[in-house]
Amino acid sequence: MKVSKLVGSRFKEKPADCVIDSHALMVRGGYMKYVGNGIFSEFPTLRKITAKIENIIRSEMDAIDGQEVLFPVVLPADLWEESGRYDSVGSELLRFTDRNNAKHVLGMTHEEAAVHLVREYAQTYTKYPFMIYQVQRKFRDEARPRAGMIRVREFTMKDAYSFHTSQEDLERYYAIAYKAYNRIFQRAGIPEVVTVASDSGMMGGSLSHEYMLLTPVGEDSIVLCNECDFRANMEAAKTIVENQPGQAEDLECIETPDCKTIEDVCGFLKSDVETSCKAVVYQKNSDDTYVVAFVRGDYEINETKLRNLVGEEIHPADITEDCGLVAGYIGPYQITDKAEVYLDVSLKGIRSMVAGANKEGYHYKGLNLERELGEVTYHDISKIREGGICPCCGKPSITIKRGIEVGNIFQLGTKYTKSMNMQYTDENGELQYPIMGCYGIGVGRLAASICEAKHDEYGPIWPISIAPWEVEVCCLRVDDEETKKVSDEMYQKLLQAGVDVIYDDRDVRPGAMFSDADLIGAPIRVVVSPRNLKESCIELATRDKSYKEMVPVEEAFDAVLKLKQQLFDDINAKVEAYE
Image 1: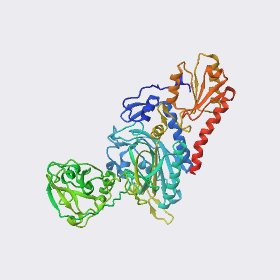
Image 2: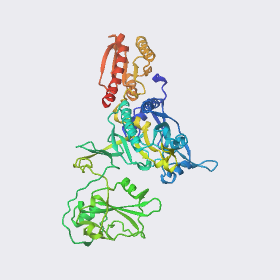
Image 3: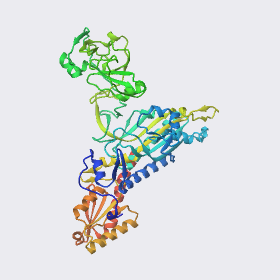
Image 4: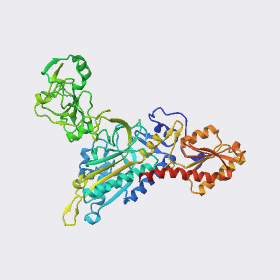
């Protein structure tokens, strides 16, 4: 490829709507173009990157006996009605009706399609186990697309589905897929990815892990322990609180005018926030029943945990005059029976606390939940905090970092095979439901995440395994006969050797050429100039600036091949070290 022919413009100015570096660099570098909210077209440069990522994924999936298939993007609604997700999934699922008044959806994930494809094929235990996968476009109607390719509405994803006759066999294969995913990210040049325990969400299942690239711009909160190997997504991390009981006190109902927040109440009563109880109110999506979650005043509700406990989707409540709840003064004692009430573990053991009195302008002081309510059940519905107690080693050593989810794996169980009546005959002639696993990687998000992790102020620094071009040849004077001759010959020799090379053959100033080369981000750069040729040399450098040498012209081709092999060896060594 020659830069003079490359479709896609590069420019210096940072677009105003780009909030993270990878988004800005990929727009400036001619990688993608905005089409609509959360929807982008890919220029050739990005397409080359994603194609290389897809090839890495395919080779690793094939290596663990995966078989590539392809499902439709448009799926009839009755498949999703079979699984129950047509109604249970929210507005992220795009539903529509065709000209024949038949209901359809745009696939945002393909568990239903996977079961549909193989349920007639796999009717006997002799067909198991097996895994099928696809690399496919999907559509998820995200409410808040952001950060370029990090969170979009239309995206390319590799999703795989394994089928088993026992939980033990699923766990065996799950461990194999777990390792394959680590190899994928190492081969893509980001061994920094960590695995964390996660919540299965709408996918269902008993166990799941997410693969997270730790970065300050990530939208997920990752819980890590400094003392052991515990890692989990905030949504799945267990909260452990050891309260100091304190002395029990008499219950008092005290007027607290204009005190509707925990900070206001504690300030007015001169009490500690650690002995306060606050209410967070939701409503069920299905029937608008009120759900009141109580948590210690300095903790926050974990909506995912609460949603799982309630057993259905919830949303922030609209507190009306006739609902029985008094906004700003809601407490667990003598609360209306119109609401479902849940108490968080952060309240356990406090003998005297401040809480709303369910009366306008009043709070209780000295509230003791066991004394006032009798038998009390506590639930883990709060977010673990920085410095909190590790659920694994029990030490107060929790740290919280941000991360981008680049992959996920789930043990689905029989959620979909049962609901869609997929059965097989076992060795005893009895009908059984297959057990499923699910394994996903967002291709475009992975490309953007790598850019976020591997860049400087000038542009991306692509790992050689996924770089759009492995080598860029820069001809600094196309009007100089010898310079152009040496550049042309180097380009042709690299092409013939099978090197993925791009050649900047334009008549532009060196500053503009180098600026564009930084945005293209080829790991190896060959610079040919009249000044260097006076010394019978060319400049050979790496994009990350770790290497720069003047090499004799007659040795330059071999030096490029050697450097390319060294960069690949560095990546492969990390994969081998993991093995």
